[in-house]
Length: 420
Image 1 (cartoon, rainbow, N blue to C red):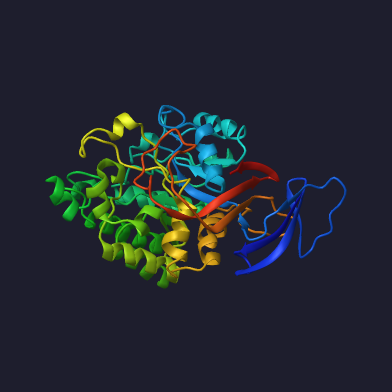
Image 2: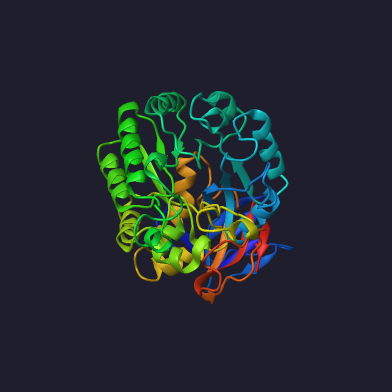
């Protein structure tokens, strides 16, 4: 197969250039201008379109095992491929929790049946109770990609320090959901205009700030590599910035909804815009964009969190938090970051492919010869409106909103995983 005449978005060279890509035996075999076609070689002309490394999402919820009425590994993988993702890392908050090898292998084996790479994070604590460490070595030896209790904050500082010391020893990244429940009355809604609108307590940004501060300090002390997940407040961004400047191995991810929307969306869309941590103020949104611009925030991750329509139809205090995000993520990055001039297209792709690959130790995210032929082909000028999804779920405030940037094809391991 030869991908011809594409504008290659190369996050390693940090430049965009027109060239062809030859794919052979699942690998990138050649990158050059005007590659000569061999007999019986399939030609895909992508003139006017962009070709980039397949996107990598370090934070998704496929709800399998145990909650497959919301999503399962197959529908999650279909949704990912439709969004241009060739690799995803599933979170461990399934039923049962991925705190053991049996459950880990279940996900990885089912993932092998899909057209994209479905990876799985292991839990930090047994049963997500924050009391006893899982067997990090065993989980990692059996294929876990990182460790996290995402969905449940780790409240005990001594336990977190112990986890970091072990992670430092094993050179593995710990990812943290930073919300102190002691400071939250009703989660999923920002304490401010949104909570006032609903007449509830809400979730103040201090809940995030306090744990980010603690964990940045512990990371500096222990030398561990940590990732601050779905960062939502300007103050938390600044804490990460300071930790990086001090030499700590602190990374951060931002979800598209946090650099696109504010708490006004929670008022407009109700439970469809309820999430943990919540949408905050315009000042916070702009601080996240600044963090993406200056490298404080390393990655864009969707926190794809499917729920049933029945669950999201409940009241603002009873409905679960979270939105789906895989099929709109690239378009939101193009619409909200590239088109307004906040990031270049190369910078966006770097945060959606190369950076997560490097942080999680994956040999992916590049257009280098010899690497896996994981590619996304997309058109930055095509505008579209999300209406239907490959996911089982539809819980998102972006339905019906015009977005720019359309995925045309996703290729994983040299095979077409999605074609629009």
